[in-house]
Length: 194
Length: 362
Image (cartoon, rainbow over all chains, first blue to last red; front, side, top):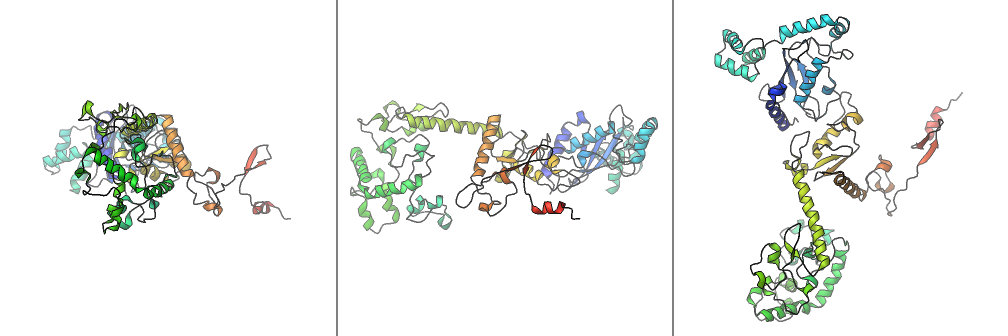
């Protein structure tokens, strides 16, 4: 059974220092078992300026079992599958500890973005490229960031404008955007699912 | 143990617990005659107390109380006459609750068809404090402490016939008898200890479990309000969280020693968890908690060892008692073997089959 009171506390804690960490965790629905984590790309890396969404599913044994995390945003990284978004990170597997929280786990994922481990790859193609043609890797990673993770390049008004043009009422668009932390794609997904 | 002590409510014919009472409902069992006030160091009756003055550590207190009970019932007049003398002294009879014309001896009541609690009237609670006026010639150590002063302030002030005790530095009450050194010291000891306990408990209340993020002592269920102390580090958890984590079935390649037995915070491996209702704030306090816990376990027979009939997987490291039925403790003799490379190894579970298996039969 998931310890929901702990998840509640974690969410509160996370929203408290959202300014300093930039890490956001929001529940997908009323059920706290499925959440969305949002991390900013670390500065000084090809992921800088991007906003990455991570799907979080809490197993029944949480916090005694690690949360399942997967990138929802496409990302080019040796330890993250370019196809599925699966993350290869020890603390999400055998090095999990119940003293870790969603926020600290997301911080670790963010750290993984700035320090790839090509020796223990999740995506062999990316890892090969990272080792053999580092410059090409940086270029691809930046391109992917620009293409898939740059929602914040648009201002809030532009996003609202875009979604309103799709036929959604403006007030609903604004509240939905607010709820998903300004991510236009997530907002669209939510709006479509009703 | 408590089953063999006579229930005092039953003795008065009014035990509400009936069958479920944890005290004995058998008249043959001795009542508990120990003065709890004396044990706290604040009995105001001193040597005149009708209850036994024994130290809390005396384990045979119950057994001995049966003999004193016999002694008392054989001389019922002593206590009853004490009553009458007090009554005579004060001229107050109504407030004692006794019908007028009570004979000096309590015995005649037995013959009447009275409810059983009247039988016991000779051993009733002491009379109201107001009615006991001290004879001026009593020795100072025999004079009782004023209970009003001990509880706070005495309305009678300086005109009070009782001794107003000295102030106890730790509880701040007037409950140290100036003429009974031993009792006062006992009270001081108990009081300081109690005060310290309260202090630690207060500080423990602030401690949060790092897993469930709750304050351990404020958890909803009583059983959960306990800390699980790890032997090797000082990170606080509640007992249910840390036990839960350590008993998680190792999945996806988790190593028992490196992951599950490690502290969730510092990953230092601890081989056992100590349950405790208080948290500690110094190494000494921790050692005390651990030692107390181990001492308690050492008094319990190991169910695996089963008085020598079983086999305890923990062997010599087991915290529980390994004793045979006759009370003999298990003796452990380790066999040391010199290994080929010169090291000494401890021989353990050597089977003949190990040797036969390695034989090459040509």
